[in-house]
Every structure is written in structure tokens, then in C-alpha cells.
Length: 212
Image (cartoon, rainbow, N blue to C red; front, side):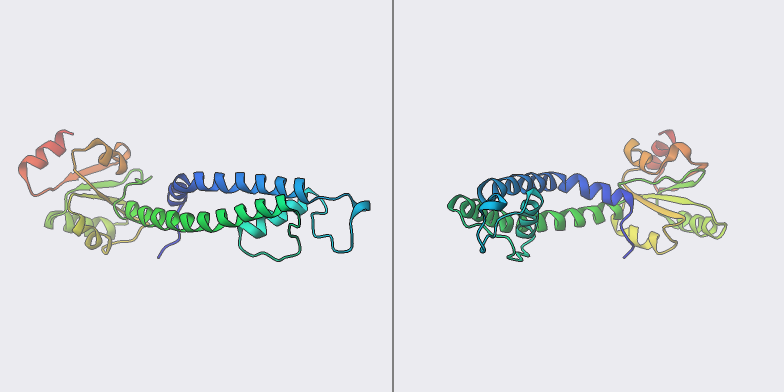
């Protein structure tokens, strides 16, 4: 599998940013509460003191607890601190379960969007082929041999792997959708295309695509 590009990363972030914001918010609150309940001035500490040396230690406690590492170098001893830590632990397991599910779903959706070409291409001065027919196949073969950048628009999802097998991401982009749909044409960056080849295999579709 190829590494995720900036569009995929942006899509993933758009799906999980709320969870990340909640994570940061809980980290801040838990760290401040740990400091509030457990901090003791240096001249009043005993030998068994396990509270924070400063606010930075409170953030350390919050991070290791939320990450489920739990080194144990800092831990609460007051009732208030223990209650706050208990809620933090419960939140951690709930959050991690939801986060893993959200990330998994977002990754699958991002891959699906990439497969269907929904993020669009930045090709310019390229060739757009509308439809996947025997004429399209021959045209694509010749264009790729000539080292041309090509976008193929197909309304048959099953044909996408076959089209992709004919070239590489460097000079071939596949878009799934209807040829006369403006959004689909925008994904193909048809505005900056040098040539558009309409070969849908259906006279009516070819006429509509040509007019569009």
C-alpha cells in the first residue's frame, strides 16, 4: 500500500479532530485537578510524597494515565485526587475504544474515497477519457506510452481496478461517477484538461457528456 497523501491525512483529521480536541481538554482538566488536589509546598512534604513537583508533573501524570502507560512515579493520595483519577481512567478506556473505532472507520472511508477518486486530481494539460470501452482502452494504452497524464471517468465501479492496472498513480487517475455530473468532472480537473475523449459506448450518454 502506498503511504497516505496530504488529502487522505486531511480527510482523516476532519473525521477525528473532535476526538483529539476532547482528549486535549480532558488532559488539561485532569492535570489541573491533579495539581490542585495533590500539590504540597516543598517545605511541607514528607518522604513518601507522590504529588507533583510542579504543573509540568501534573501534565506528565495526565499523559501517562491517558496513554495507559502509568509509570507510577506520580499518583494521588487524597480522596479528591483519587476520585478525579478514577474518572480519568474510566474516560481513558472509553475514549480509546471510541477512538480506535473512529480511526478504523475513517481509514476505511479514506481508502474508499481514494479508490473512487473522490478527492480529485491536480493534473493539468492532461487527457480526460469519459467512459471505459474498447476505444477507451486503446486510447489509454497509446496515451500512457506517449507519457501523457490521463484521467479516466467510469460509471462502473467494477472496472476501476482494471483501469488502474494499466498505469501508475504518477500519470493515471481514475474517477468513479456519471460523465455529465459537474462534481465528477471537477474531480477530473476537466477545466485544465488539454483534451477530452468521450467514449461511453452509448450514443445518448456520449451526446450528454459532450454537451456538458
